[in-house]
Length: 41
Image 1 (cartoon, rainbow, N blue to C red):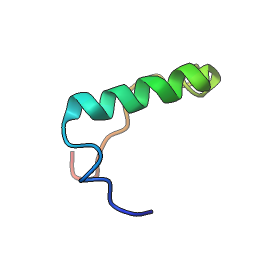
Image 2 (cartoon, one colour; image 1 turned 30 degrees about the horizontal axis):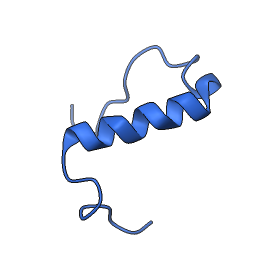
Image 3 (cartoon, rainbow, N blue to C red; image 1 turned 30 degrees about the vertical axis):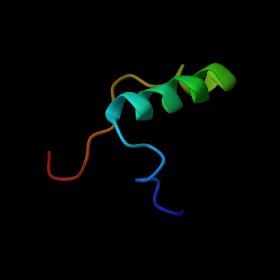
Image 4 (cartoon, helix red, strand yellow; image 1 turned 120 degrees about the horizontal axis):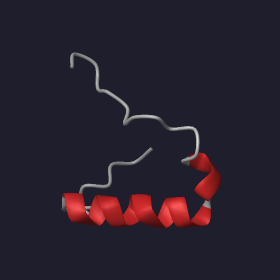
């Protein structure tokens, strides 16, 4: 996957993309109990 640093510049932009993905595929969220953890946390 190519880097998106030039397209998604802020965390607000990232959340807009995530929100759009959830609108297009709401069933992808129903089984999520908690946010994913990054390794080392």
